[in-house]
Image (cartoon, rainbow, N blue to C red; front, side, top):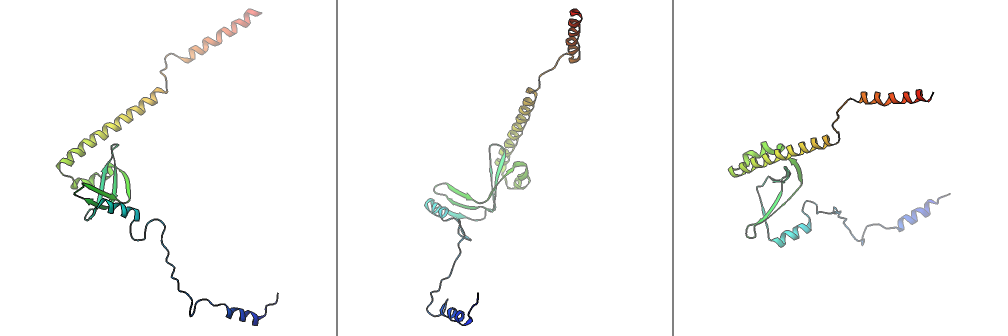
Length: 169
C-alpha cells in the first residue's frame, strides 16, 4: 500500500487536540472504597450521629475474649462521648494469644486488673486441661481393651478343619 505523504500531513494538521478553545479537563483518580488519607464516609456519618469526639494518646487497645485469646489493635482511632458512655474503637485488629502480650501489658495494669488477669489465666489453664483430657478420652474411645491371646484362638480354629477331612475318608 502506497501512502501519499502530502495527504497524510494535510489530515494530521486538520486534527486538533488541545490548543486554543479546547476544554481543559484534569483527571483525578480516586481510590475505590475509602477516601485516600482519610476515613470511610459512612463511618464518619455514623460517628457524627453518635456525637463522639476523637480521643488522643491511645497507643493500643487489647480486648480479652472468653476463649483466652486477645483482640489486639495497634494505633487505633478512638472516639468517645462521655455523656452517653459511648466509645468507638476502629483500626486493624489481630487475634493473639494471651501469652504473647503478657510481658508488654503487665506494666499497664492496675491492682484490680492484675487480679482479673490472674483469674483469666487460671480459667485459660483449666480450659486447656479440659480440652487435653477430652482429646485423650476421644483417642481412647476408638481403641477397645484387648484381653487374651490371639494366637491361641487362631490355632483352635485351624485344628477342627483338619479332623473333618480325616473323618470323610
